[in-house]
Length: 186
Length: 211
Image (tube, rainbow over all chains, first blue to last red; front, top):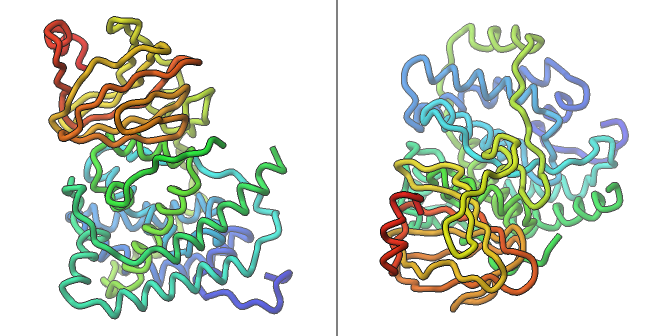
């Protein structure tokens, strides 16, 4: 982070960037200490049984290490990126099918990161966590069930109604900027 | 990138993000997101919500040696899954379903061709090739049908659909999509139920062609 002396990212972002850019094992261990026990709880909620549970935790953390170059803090906070990896892995393991995933956006890690955009994404994620903590218990339970609960083929007419408007427009701005830069490269 | 006017409805996007969408629909959603910044942002927003929920979970104590086991494997060789890039009009997820090969088209009559990507208990997903001016046989649905345009365009009672546009049709919609003039229309279409056709001949052919 030497080129961003005045900006302080969250611990998680700092660890993840150290893993991505410097293959920093201590930072990876710190990520494990935070996310490992939560990923275990997530795997159990999703319906994983016995040895599957920690196998999933292990697979997810190894993917975090191996695919670190795909982490882009300008459009996803660390937990969002890990959430996606974890849900996909649960589907692979428990449904024995590969979830189709969108094309990756290709960009150069050496591109000057937009610190303001990274901070904004972090801030929106913080707002989201606060918004969730203010939900009524039954509302919260419903959302938890949808995002973290047992994998099932739910009725797609159901909606949980989290307020995602602000973070969505924030992410869209980041993506459009990225797309603009990509156009320059191609 | 094309101007996209018809996007993934919020409920579908959430179902995709949280892993509750059946495979045929998940493929169409992934293909649309590959073409659409707006919906990619929407997906990231759902992941942000999932991430926030994940962070809010209480700790579940892990085995004493789990961390050491994982750290031991950081340098171990691993098998990388192949990444399928976009090819022509086919987005990466479609190329993955095609295993990197060109579609194998089968004639289904009236110049319409199809290439089935998968069919199973949760529905089916196929590529459709429709010559300009040609109608896809009039059909209504038992369940939900998603149609993503990859080349050309089609129009029906609900509007015009160009490259990247996604039409969502349920059993209440009786529609007759007709390929517009110009390039043949190529679509990615998924359904969670067998389609019902009105004409007698298509009805006889339905089990044969799995349409």
